Image 1 (cartoon, rainbow, N blue to C red):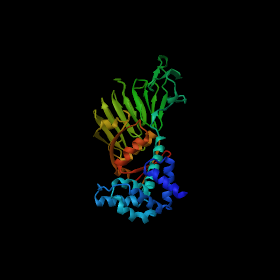
Image 2: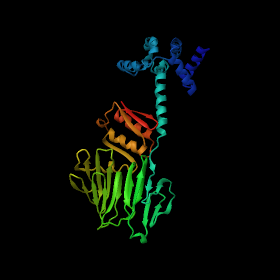
Image 3: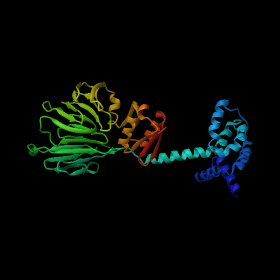
Image 4: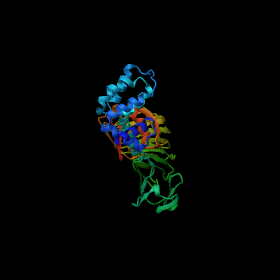
Length: 392
């Protein structure tokens, strides 16, 4: 009865009409090794229905493919020689016989693994517009759940959330004489947000970023503190310069568009100027930037140097993309970590020695990013929950 079942499953598989359940059952039969003799007989029977054709492959390539195929399961070695004599007589039969020789189970397992990984990856969606606001009075507001419209959370300060998710501050006239309170906006990993500061300056916050600022700029300088990455479009005030502080440097502007990447887990802090002028100051140096230039601060030696900037790559995150141009794998996977809120580990891989390039929308699930990175970097990526293992 079992032999009949095996014959039936073989036929269904051979004519490509087997259901998923039948396919799985057939693969388990083959993998058991108990049906090798019957498998050889069935192959002989079905082989007789085909007319010989010339193989399109060279003998060397045939042998290379065949060794991979027939070594898929050691239990099939007994029938390897028999099949070898016939396999390349007809390339049409080759595909079917290859599947029936346990290679089917080999590739079935690979495909099942890939499907499992694909399913796991599909559960890891892209980041979204989300952040939390900590007011000067200690009140915490989850901005992604905040209703659209104007609301007052502090005396003299009104906060408006627009339909496109932007946060706008309005400071009432009667509050002009009061001391400013310090507000904090924090985006988590997997989040980004846009805020319009009390002076009209617009700020886009990348994932895992913290921005601290006054709810009303009343001092000689408009000062904010940044950890992470943000793009600024600064409202012009001739006599009140805008200053961004990081833990290692200070960027001073009058009215300009620029991007600062100042993550604590990076080896550099990078200020890139798109429009206007800025002065970047570190412990070791002072640089004046022109549009298209960037100041790169090496955090290992506190050296500050100037480079020409690749604005397309720098601004990719704000424009909803990943763009990698000769970027090392370590840097790429840090961006993946922050945007998809995952933890990346490397196994027998030196991520700084692998360079890659490519483009993909940040709106795609992580599976799309992985499909691009794997072949370019010649690596394998395994997904377990929110843990990403990169290996050879």
